[in-house]
Image 1 (cartoon, helix red, strand yellow):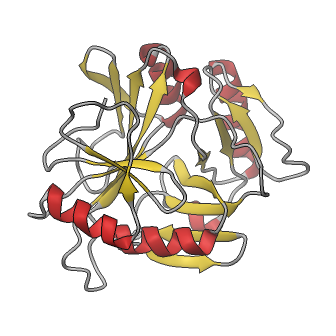
Image 2: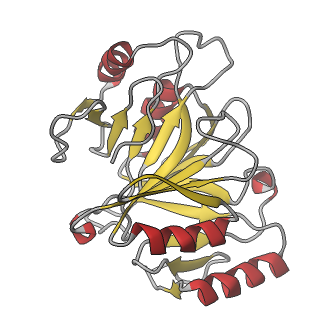
Length: 266
């Protein structure tokens, strides 16, 4: 999966034009996995070309600022792709949580143990092994849509909150030594959460990275320069000659900066 960032509006950050708009999933079978996630989220499914499945919420189209999207992209060896990001799904009641878990298992999800112990959320893996969580009802997640949060394992939540808050202009809602939470200043879409991992801990299985989409007249080169000044660095993930720019945040999490008007990278 890949996380895409695009325009944020508010709080006087007029020079910024980036907002979190989608996750991108590296898949062995993008059609089958796309069907799973489309049914899990209640999204509609289409394709922009061979090897790519696109999922959109009903009633919006890319890149509507009120939409949060999922792209699934076929790769030759998804097992070689491993990041520290997973999704948390939202529920509105204990009954909803139980029903959603049961439905996800019918669709092909399986329970997994990643050392979570006794927790109120349920940890599952999708049909290709990507770990995700179904949260217990939380008041703050009632307006996020089906995806409550994009969760990133990290060494220092404070550092990550500082970088990403500056990078996309999101509001830091909570920050501490073990956890930081950010959200769009427009109070739409999922939260972005950074959770401290124990030193040497292996990340749970997932295939997510972040993309940034310049909008509002901003140019890709200017946004890349700004992100580098904040601490991002160039990264090579074998992308070759492509119209997007691959960077890594201060803890090495890769993400892409797209050109204006672009769809997600393959």
